[in-house]
Length: 100
Ligand SMILES: [Zn+2]
Image (cartoon, rainbow, N blue to C red; front, side, top):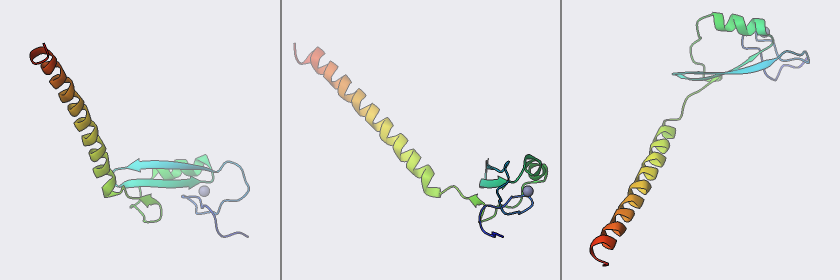
C-alpha cells in the first residue's frame, strides 16, 4: 500500500483512489493552513475542534518581506502620481505666467 501522498488532516489516512477528497486553505493571523480531507465529515470534525497550534508542515508563515514590498509599490505609485501632478501644475503655471 502506498504510504506517500496527501493525508487527511483529520484521520491521517493517505489519499487513495476513492472520490470525495478535497483540499481547503484556511487563513488565520498566524499564517495559513493547507488542509486535505478524505470526506466532508472529517472536514467538519476538524473545524469543530479548536485550531491546532501552527505546524511547520501545514502552515506557511507570511514572509516578513512581502508587506515591505507592498508598501514600496504603494509608495512608488504615490510618488509617480505626485510627480505627474507636479509636472502638470508646473506646465499650467508656466503656460499662465511665463508663456504669454
Ligand atoms: Zn479522514
